[in-house]
Image (tube, rainbow, N blue to C red; front, side, top):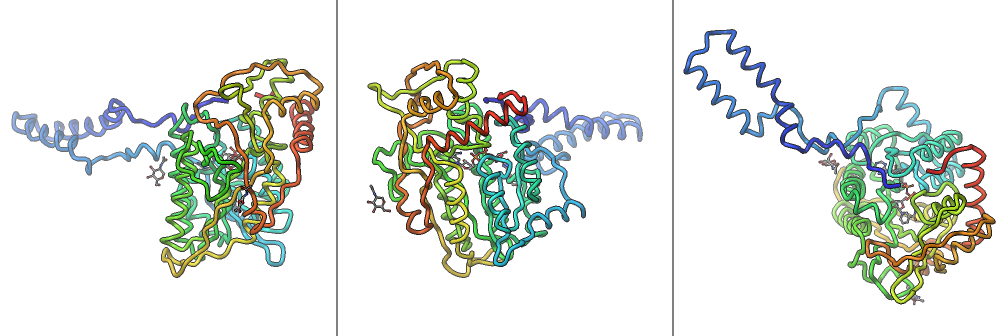
Length: 437
Ligand SMILES: NC(=O)c1ccc[n+]([C@@H]2O[C@H](COP(=O)([O-])OP(=O)(O)OC[C@H]3O[C@@H](n4cnc5c(N)ncnc54)[C@H](O)[C@@H]3O)[C@@H](O)[C@H]2O)c1
Ligand SMILES: *[C@@H]1O[C@H](CO)[C@@H](O)[C@H](O)[C@H]1NC(C)=O
Ligand SMILES: *[C@@H]1O[C@H](CO)[C@@H](O)[C@H](O)[C@H]1NC(C)=O
């Protein structure tokens, strides 16, 4: 669960490595010089001065040393066959269909949204870097699923501007469904850089390419209920304060909302942020409680159940994936066109934020009881105090705005949704004889 993102780990930031990579160049120059003429005292001084100049002057750096470039794994993309796959995946097949770039398409929500769009005849192209924040084989299995319905996932990073520009060159996307992110609240203390990379730098790179695209796409993207942070007024409504994030993850999502405001204001990009509330369901995320509770209950391992101060209940507004998908599609369908072109704003554009929740918070202990019934196994409960490392005590969405403007109406209760999750879990891990982490 808490594996490092290996491609972020080999950043050559140590000065030692910096010099080592430079030395062959320096040695070559020395050898070349001494073979031309005998080394005299003065030429030594002269050469020394040149070497000092080379070491001091940043502009004479012979090797690309931008460490962030190294943090991007190198992916294979490009070429006529690749472009053909991209085009074919993004081709609209229904009358009035849209053409959507889905980032994070091998992720939990991304897979479901991509499949739903494809089913209605929209053009869909996925983008995902398949990082190993959680078991990448699950991402590969989702990819195989999408492949069968004709969705191609380009393997690459959202912070790779050259790749993004290429994708917009090949396809004139009408919409971007931006779901790629570093998710998870607790992992932010282990690997803060991955949140900055994907949720801040990656978002900016994506918006930069979108604002320059012609035509500019409309963008719908995933924010999070975590932006409500330490807000205690319930249910959470879009107008409530969101300036007290309780985790770096929440802070990067809040930053994303502000960055969205900027790109809407300066460039006329149509932007819709969706604040998801604890999404669960088949093909879900192994780092989330309902998922690893299921795994650990089946293994007979004890599960940690958090309790707030004074035995306070920790509860979540669990939202079933199919309801979230409906909300995402409704947001895409009601998104107005961006108004800018060629990187210039022509007029005001749409800027929206919606809660997508279920409106009925369930205590985590009830979640466990439902799982026990479905799995027919008693859980070993390990009651613990809620640590102050990012998780909030309570989430509860007010969804009246999404209801009014998107026609959003969640219809799956936790009992029904978990039944579908458990059925998927058992067939995926037992049927396939795979080990769940
Ligand atoms: N699942 C939830 O409960 C929940 C709640 C609130 C918000 N969200 C947000 O919804 C979105 C989707 O979440 P999810 O649950 O499907 O998570 P997920 O981790 O399953 O999916 C995210 C996908 O993005 C990919 N990705 C990450 N960084 C990338 C990068 N730099 N370049 C390219 N691809 C990258 C990952 O490989 C992954 O497949 C995320 O933005 C998440 O923050 C999810
Ligand atoms: C993201 O890409 C930009 C521009 O390509 C680069 O300057 C930046 O360092 C990268 N950031 C991260 C965190 O990878
Ligand atoms: C939910 O939000 C709407 C505004 O979008 C507000 O009018 C309503 O009073 C809120 N409901 C509750 C129960 O707070």
